Length: 446
Image 1 (cartoon, rainbow, N blue to C red):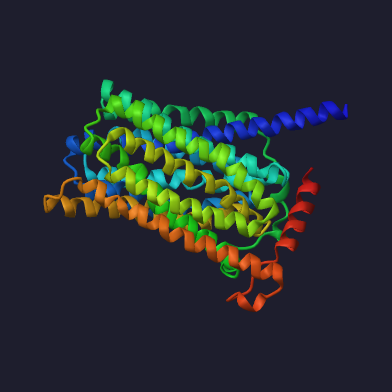
Image 2 (tube, rainbow, N blue to C red; image 1 turned 60 degrees about the vertical axis):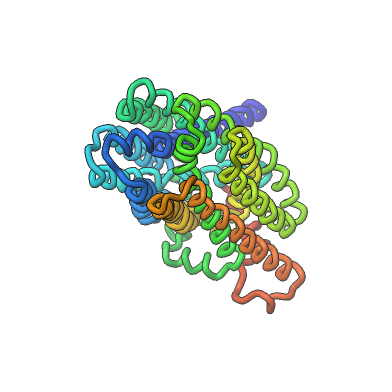
C-alpha cells in the first residue's frame, strides 16, 4: 500500500509539473505572437516602432508588475490553484481581443489587460513547485518549467508565423488564444488545491511591504533581482525585435522565420535550460559562489554572441550566434530562480517571486522593447543601415552589466561563509535557518 501511495504521489507531482510547463508554454506563446506579427500589424494599423515598443513593453509591464503583487499575495494567502486558473482565463481573453483591435489606443489597453493575466503565472507556478517538490528535485523542476517558456516562444514563432501568413495576423491571434482556456479547465478540474492547507495559517503570513523589506535586507536577493532585471532587458528586447530584425535585415519571410529562427532560438535555449542549467545547479550544491560567478561569465559570453548575431552579414552565422546566446543565457535561469526561492521568506514565496518579477518586467519587458524601438526609429530617421540591429545592442550591453550583480552576490556568500560579515554592506538572511525552516515546512506537508 505504501509503494502504491508513493507512486500515486509521484504521479500527481509529475502531472502538476506537466500542466505548469504547459501554462508557461502558452504564456510565452501568447506573449510572443505580437513580436512575430509585428510587421503585418505595423502595416495594417500604421504604427511606428516606438508605438510597437510601448505597446509590447510599457503597457504590458505597467500592469504586469502592479497586478502581480496583488495576485501573488492572494495566491499565498488563499489559493494558488484558483488564482492561476483565473489569470490564465484573463490573458487568453485579452489575446483573443487583440484580434479585434483597430487602433494603437485599443492595442495599448488590451495589452494592459494581458499584463494583468500573465502577472500571476510565474509567481504562483514557482510557489507551487517549491511546495510540491523536495529540495533535491526543485532545480530540475524549475528547469523543466522554464523550458515551457522556450517551447512557447518556438510555438508562437513557428505556428504564429505560419497562421499569420496563411490567415492574417488577426485570425492567428484568435486561434492561438484557445489553448489557454483548455489548460485552465484542466487545472481547475484535476489538480488538488493543496495550498489551502497552508493558507489557513494566516498568522504565519507576512505583508507585501514586510516581504519587500526582507528582500531589501538580503544583498544576495537584491543582487539576484538586479542580475535578472538587466538580463531581462536583453531577453525581452530580443524576443520582441529579433523576428523583425531578420525580416528587415536578412529578408526572411514569415515562413522562413517560422523555420530558421524558431529552430535556432529554441535549440539554443533548450540546450541551456536542460543541459547547462542542471550542470550549473550541480556546481551550486557544492560551491554556491562559484556557480554564481559562472552565471556571470556565461552572460559575458552571451553578450558577445548577441553582438555578433546582430552585426554579422551572413544569415546562417547570425542564427548560430543567436543560438549560442540562447544556450548561455538559458543556463543561468534555473540556478538563479532556485537560489532566489531558497533565500526568499518561506511563507511568502509567491509574493517574493512577484517582487522579483516587478523589477524584471519593468526593466526588461518595460524597458527593453521600448528602448530598442525608440533607438531604431532614431537611427532610421538618420538613414543608418541595419538600424534595428544596432539598436538591439542595448540588450548586449545589459548582459555585460548583469555579470557585476552575479559577482556581488557571490562575494556576499563568500563573506558569509568565511564569517567576515563586516564586509557585507547590510544584514544578510541566514541561509542555514531558511533552509531548515523550508525543510520542516515540506516535511509537515508531506
